Image 1: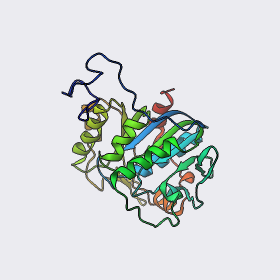
Image 2 (image 1 turned 120 degrees about the vertical axis):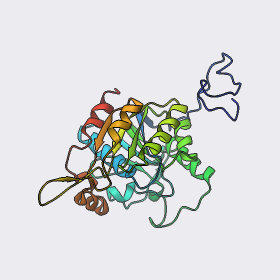
Image 3 (image 1 turned 135 degrees about the vertical axis):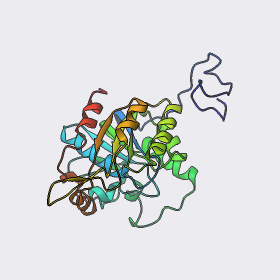
Image 4 (image 1 turned 90 degrees about the horizontal axis):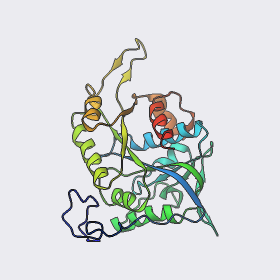
Length: 278
């Protein structure tokens, strides 16, 4: 395969085996022998600060409440927040099977670099190839056991790690997280285009910080301006899977490490879509 191959023969000009009629190469890394993961779902955003980790955490909790076996692979190596959200303090340990993920209160399996560091506030000052290699190792070296749905919390943007996840893991689809600001169309487009280049289906969009409900009158206030997520989703022919409000109670639960106690069915449509994947 040529180094410049984009994995999309419609847009790529490179000469490689797949274009010339040969069998396409499977670049996916082999999972740990003690892992059986049925579906891998990437949670991605074109920029940081939109609540991607929050959505990944809420989706995993929602799927666990429907009695699925769930895991979260925290691929945001330099900005891991999943362990904090679930209140995980213990370190991951190893055995003859591989590295063992840490289980949350309700049984969600988690692997994050923060579960391997001596102190959770230690910075990860690594170059791109090492970060990308660590993400691959979370797939190849971790003994995940039986998992129905694995959510991959991706770092923001479309760089090394996102490319590594798409190439190395058998991603069944992605959920794009956005916010209501006007630049959201550009951000969504970047994520959608990258998924298209890697032949990964976009399952839908989730808008975070969509509105704030006044505690006095109950009126919904669009703090960041009117939402355009429905029009954007229609332009890409993908569904809107949820609109999350600005919820101080939910934010407090994340800070306290008890996201599994959140109430609300904001992502019920997303869960329905995921269950239809089989």
